Image (tube, rainbow, N blue to C red; front, side, top):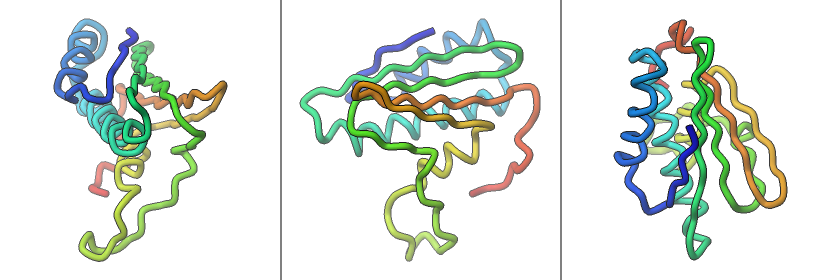
Length: 141
């Protein structure tokens, strides 16, 4: 399943299209809900950090469910930015923590694997989750 998404779309509409696909393909469990959270965080980052620098911003999401795994492939325009190399979130109270990085930390914590590449002005982030086993660390960030 591949979706073409505009940065001004609501996350609710994006998730509804993904839910429609998951209903026929994947189990409805906590790991699938993690996929929804990752998509939500990714969309928020696109709106905040990419779309504000472009006249229009379209990104693409491919969802593949196979052998108990869900692969989310995000393709988006813009300068090279590798989310897998983001600085770790400081272990500080939220009131004193600098703004930024929490969404990427959440995505990293919820996924089993994240891979990134950049080619011809397009960033590609692939996030994989194993839906057959619970996350090892199910604690809050």
